[in-house]
Image (tube, helix red, strand yellow):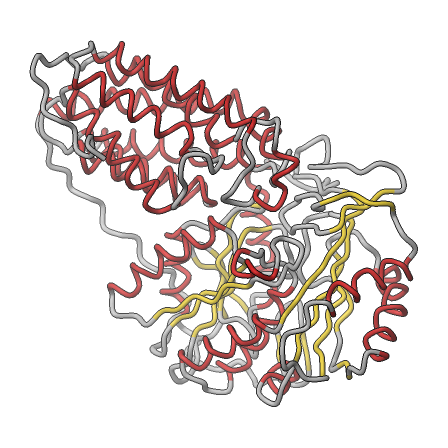
Length: 586
């Protein structure tokens, strides 16, 4: 259990600040994460690793010569926001382009993708390399859906070495994707990890049990089995890995036996005594193997085996020198470059708002709705986390609280500066996405912004405008997340809400009644997700365990809309001949 902390919600930020202070000769903190202390003397590709906190030495511990140029750091087990990714990239970019590399998780894909679009719009070359090494999380026929776990390290190392040697962006990306295609990982958990401030782990196992196929966000194994001896566990790992040998693979391997946080090195060495001979007996040469902690999961008790098949291109990069706070190999080149480039990315200038009196008056209602939502989510934080922990990492409640706290504060600040309703919702959305991170963070943030843009800053909205805003909210979320009804996501509650509200507004129903009816439909749909198996997101690999539990994203959405409704509709009048809301035909 994590015992050293102040405010649990500030744990990740304080840990990053302490890390950057200890290793100030190698790294410097910037908004959203950390980068190398010194910029390169000449343009080079910036390799930026990223993801949530709780995995040290991944990701910030790998910043340095021969490895990463920076790390984008989210909250514990939560994707960093698009703003964080953008800010780190701006601080690390030196003229040769940027590549984000990270595990294949929905929140990371969304946030790094949005940051990439923003960088590209500014003329910065940018690419993304996803790691998909976890063989337990999807079958070979769906390899593109697999999670990234300890194989992150191998892919990061090869990309970092290539960039250090002067490869251009296209070549760094090609080598990273090649390394990923030749990397396989299998892991096992013995006991769950515990968030700072929590009084119990995210999952537990019975005596003499282990969970095979763990994730690195505190998820349990995909299925429980009897705890074997070290020899039996090693045989299980090796047989599963070699069963997925890539076609045409060579006979030289990079091997990582990785501890997840509280598995002792001595235990790993015992397991190595089985793993290594089995691999050698299968005809392989082990090239500079690593045994230790490289990609962890807070204090989880567990272990994973990663194998990368090397060739004449990849082996020199795997063997190349590196010097980072947490990992050293050989003698890396001295850190050189611009020693004065320590300034953080400048904050955007404060926005000047233009809005009429009616919209500014309705903005007060929007701020009140956000504040009511904030109170409701704080009350429900533990419950939402428990729902999420059944088949996920248990962070949904905490992520929603972080998001709504930032959104409520940003919305209130915008209103105080004269913003209209649309700008208040857009500011709230940007802040939600920046602070919450993760899939739900980016979706709620983007949705609120789209809602605000549809609502605008002129006049008090009528019922049709309110429904149009909800339609825009829905279109943005479904467009980004690609989820459909039945996938067991927030969309299962959102779609019936939007359909019901739109229909009743068109029929001339009083706005408060229309919203209340829509909220009841959303609540019923959220409860009905208990019978579904998740087809999207982090819970998908543990689909069986999710059956019987409502989806936390759908549950929180229904709760939020129920709370917001009376406030947002109080100043709205019915229309006898309402205009059709945007998107009503879809």
